Image 1 (cartoon, rainbow, N blue to C red):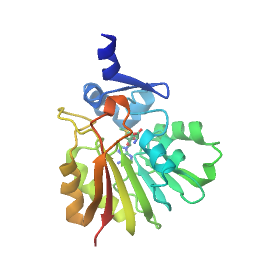
Image 2 (tube, rainbow, N blue to C red):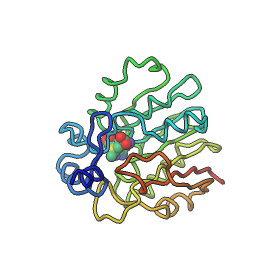
Image 3 (cartoon, helix red, strand yellow):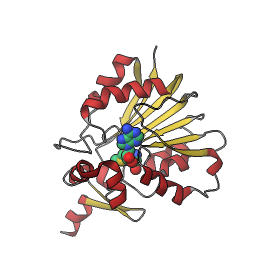
Image 4 (cartoon, helix red, strand yellow):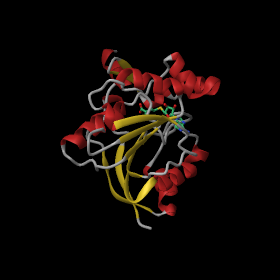
Length: 227
Ligand SMILES: C[S@@+](CC[C@H](N)C(=O)[O-])C[C@H]1O[C@@H](n2cnc3c(N)ncnc32)[C@H](O)[C@@H]1O
């Protein structure tokens, strides 16, 4: 039984992270009741690792994360924002939830690198800052939005990224469960909305650093604009 329990949830940074299939059995009700704000208010945040994504740490260690102005859409607790921020990479964490950003600021407001990141309360679908981004890192945001919003998501990624910028999508959850959020994704779900806009996948590979409840359900893709 213990083994079974181990695969259905995993503790990270003090939070229990269930499988995406399991999260999809209870998260939609809270979002339906009061939106993402309610999730954060009620502490129903089964996605929140409570610390930086292991893949981000791996990309940083291997100097394979682009430098420059960086955007994390739907940044939630801000863990990856702070992990990436340094003098050569200013990171903007964007979230629509007041509560999420309050928590992110409480956790990281006095971080030693706080001059290299900012949390902004905006809607990814409408926010268009004057300065575009060299890098956008999307993880557990594409799967959070309704399927009919995916084309709008791709349009936002295109319009927020500089012409020679890079979009990194940690594609998740690649499963066959019903319902959401988190909604199931597939490589073609990203290709279907990104390629028609002029994105090309430079590389698509398994994520070697998945947390246990997400192993085998994630692919790392790097995208560039070809026009
Ligand atoms: C499933 S959570 C994931 C958070 C974070 N990426 C993580 O992995 O911990 C999705 C986040 O996207 C935010 N969000 C949802 N719709 C948004 C929108 N239109 N613009 C900006 N943020 C949004 C929610 O408030 C929530 O914090």
